[in-house]
Amino acid sequence: MELIGSGIEKVRAFELPAGIWADGKCVETPRVALVKWSAKTNLSDMFYQVYVNGQYAGVTVDSQQRQMIVPIPTSLESAVRIEVFAVEAEQADSDFSNELVQLPATSGRVRISLLRSQNLPSDATAEIYFDNGTGEIDYSQPLTDSPIRIWPVWQDKAGFGMSRFGVGDFGYESAAAVGFGKGSFGHGQFGLDADTIEWISPPLQTGVYKFGVKITDGAGNQSSVSETEPITVIPAARPAEQVSISSFDKQTNQLVLKIEGNPQ
Image (cartoon, rainbow, N blue to C red):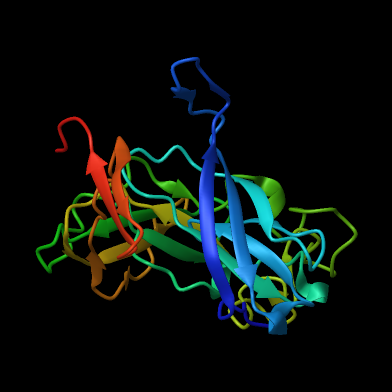
């Protein structure tokens, strides 16, 4: 199933204030937005999903709805990306965020996904390194403040005596394992998939970076290094503040905006 983006037009988002003072100023909380759109007739039987910064935010209750209120993050350093897609009615409640084109993080951060196989020991930790834009990864100093626990909750790890004793296979309690077709298909054991965990880097300057990951068990044994391909980071420009309409020419359909204050 693929999200349908063609045919959806005039997507507009309006931030809803918590209140408006007598002088016209508003209280900009609790950070929700009203999203409106229109759709062509070939999508009349579809439901619509809204995604905020690539994350599933909600779905319409029927095929006639063309607006929705969604939560938005407090994003002072970058703009919020809102997208609307059409889906079949039977897929309305499914999260298809993994189908979206992953754009560079507007905050200049890099997101790294780690495959969490049940083969990894319960005391395993991960450390992430990077090249700081030099092309050569420095493995003497991890980028993470502290090692990342692969299994922070013991109930998520399958194995003999690790889950609901007597429920799983003999010698292997798998009640907590990712079921077949539920996780990263083909990366886990036969009949049991693996899932993923994510790590997000601190803000980075514009550049090209490479990252490396090492897994360490409780005895100090380290795995071989897994390295990423070069990743280009281009932080987005800061959103404009205090924008107001200066003029609008109906003849030419030209809108002139004005930025008040001291833009920096």
